[in-house]
Amino acid sequence: MRDRRGWIAPVAVGMFALAIGLVLGSGPLRTALIGSLGVQVDSLEDQVAEAELAADQANVTNDYGDEWVDATAPQLLGTTLAGRTVAFVSVDDADAEAVAGAQAHVVQAGGTVAASVTVESLWTDPNQSAFRAALAPQLASSISGLDGTETVDQVFSQALAQALLPGTADPAAESAGSGDEADANAADPIGPNEEDRGAVLWALLTDAELVSGTRTGPADAIVMVAGEAPSDAGESSLQVTANLTLIGVFAGYDAPIVAANGPDADDDLVASVLADAAVLAPRVSTVTWIDTTYSQVTVALALREQFDGWVGHYGPGEGREAAPPPIEP
Image (cartoon, rainbow, N blue to C red; front, side):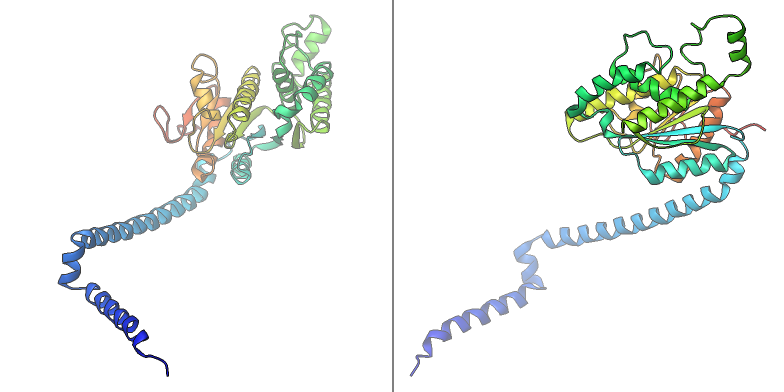
């Protein structure tokens, strides 16, 4: 026969532990044993509940704000970009939805999206530097205004600028000869030669897979939108340098330029532009938080302001405005 004494002790211990648990669940003994910890837990639970409520309220406010901006955008924008053509250039895996939203508001303002371009990773891939070095001289022969001292980044940037902005104060214009040809170019700022060269450069860039996207014709303004920089420090440095080179080349043309990105980050596109107080900041308008409806509308207004000869910096942060001033009729 089995000895039942072997299981009496475990059962007794289990019942005792259960009793202790029930006692500690509430009452003075619980307070005596855990002291103020229970009060702290209750306080933290209250704080969590308050934070959840605040987050819900913020979401409602944000959603309502987006709806309000969408509803009033037609009145805000009017026909401020009527007859204007804009090229969008995305770098660093820019948020495609944000870019599409900004493009929609440009169209809403009467403008046309002449190009929607993505700069591909091949542009800066450290493993493809030999390929880029071999390709640059081939592109250079189709680019006007070069003197042979340009870096590979500068050659590619000039190629893209002339592909998108043919006839907008081409760097070769100052060195162009005088006479009938010069007079004809002055009368027709986007002549057949410039547009042909732009189409050729676009074909060369896309065939080389340096860029992708669409180009339906020449643009007279640029919006450059950046995503997050690569996490790898080396790749990030290459990307920052390439972005600065590209925006700097764009700024050398007689065309409105707007740089935009998401929330502020060190060395992002907007920060790089603002850090260049001597050249880029007085020339290139900037917009942050491009993933919001507010900023997407601001891009269109900043373009209009640039066409009027003014530069502004918009979005949250010190030294920036909430939005451009109203457009005067």
